[in-house]
Length: 142
View 1: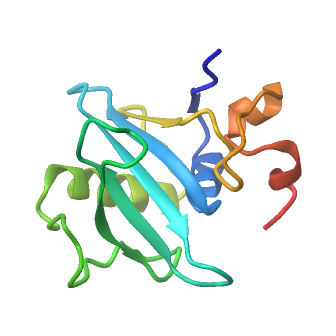
View 2: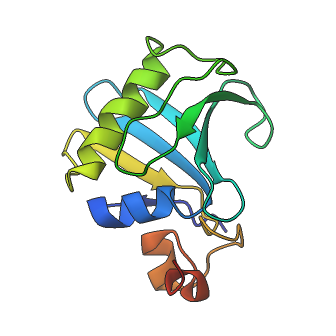
């Protein structure tokens, strides 16, 4: 059973991405191009690290893209970034993140979660959890 699902609300998409262990796919309706990102959070109140899927193994083939030091700011490209700001994947994440921060989910953007809780990584089976990308316990946590 696959529980990958589209997130149709900007607030839910932002909450999922910032949950701490999110794997999110952004797809352009216009072009059909999609990019998958892993967004993890450092322990405590640390920053978020954004990586993009660049190889065939969807569990390990991620390249470090940049850091979100502030959830209301853009991704910062650092010295360790393996993806430049000009890469199509970087542009896609930056554009999508700006829209989500503004509370918008444009019709030309589709956002999908991986079927696992964005916070703890457990398989989602509860219908409400499949919609939001967060399990019932993790939904109540910040």
